[in-house]
View 1: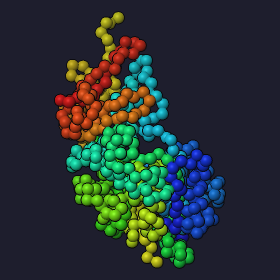
View 2 (view 1 turned 60 degrees about the vertical axis):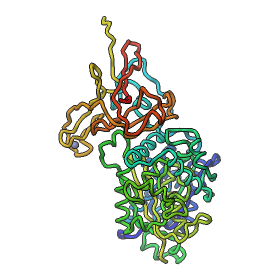
View 3 (view 1 turned 90 degrees about the horizontal axis):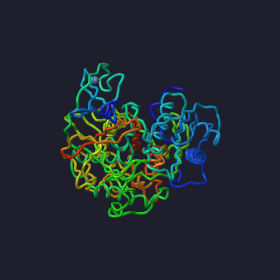
View 4 (view 1 turned 90 degrees about the vertical axis):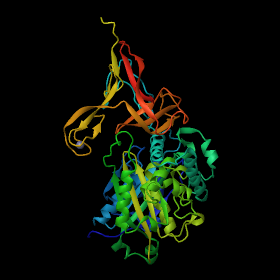
Length: 402
Length: 133
Ligand SMILES: [Zn+2]
């Protein structure tokens, strides 16, 4: 087997996002895998590599899933890359196929997160010692979260959005609420979303405040969910049925970046530079530009994050994210629909599943199988995730020409 | 036994005394600054560092008003990024109301310290934040 130039998604699936009290992590992941294999028209016997991700379970999810769907002895990679875990699992399978190690790979991301509390806050009460004793990397004599800034995700990403507002202006509390209003409106057409109820900007602004300007409905929804995908080399695809070739979606770019050093990155994670770098590489690899995109699923872990990523992904001029939103472009009937699935704020964010679920959404549109929320004539789409720390995954997907 | 109470800073990059201020490890090669220790500079990989003082005055570049936090953390509080003469510092905005009317992007702030109380040995911990200048 030789190295492959072309990679295709042969089959893909996401489970319903929401509460699955009767399914454990392995059940959920297996559900997505069985459906992805069926969608691809293959079985575990065809799969040469398997990469899986899960952050909150006990570890070794890949082997556990194999035992649920078919143990064939193939190499398994358990990957962990924060909120980019799903995209990293997919990219791991893609790299193996691209390297010619096998011609078909499987990736799965799964998370049980319904009812989880505030992420980043830690679950153990801060107990300040009776005797001050410097410890840790900063020689701290007491807990610093809350005393020197915040580690909570809503607070970190709130500052990311505020920083953009400080630099370019126009980023008001109401603007962030209207971004969230868009995504909650979009999810009314997505039966797999956690929330499917429209919310007005006023309702969103009056919701429980978590970390100004992010209210509860502007935060990603904690939920259970899984997603899985089968990837295949271009050579192998040519040997499959015409129907499989017609439904396959081309992976025109698969990029993963980490955050390069920036002056302030030790203070506030820089989610911008690595996304800009990933976008630039992805457009180059795919040979397309932002103007060629028919839809984008981007990592709106918070309303404040969606704003900066319009800019980071080059969907607008530098500094033009507010104008881009105000133009109506990212609404589903706009010039460049963003998060027609409802995004993380409304569809939900089962961490490790997200980086494959956003690709499923794009594939559904490119295959013209997206029902009520189909973006008509969609040919090229982009899926983006950010894992804080940081990791950025971008995939550009194209409709089959067959 | 001394009757002068001992003080310790909340973190080792806060220097107490007459004029409390922050310090950082600065890469002697490229000037990148770090509040914690690094084996090599994250920017240029050089391995020599010197200690530098961070200016106490700065500009508020980003903030959030945290209303929900981990157990034991008092809310609301204002978490912020302050630009102190080109060095970004993380700290809370203190000595003002934690609301968007009193805390605004671009406002001038300065370092302020406060007592965190004494431990069983009578040692007082001192924290820092930034207050409107
Ligand atoms: Zn350096």
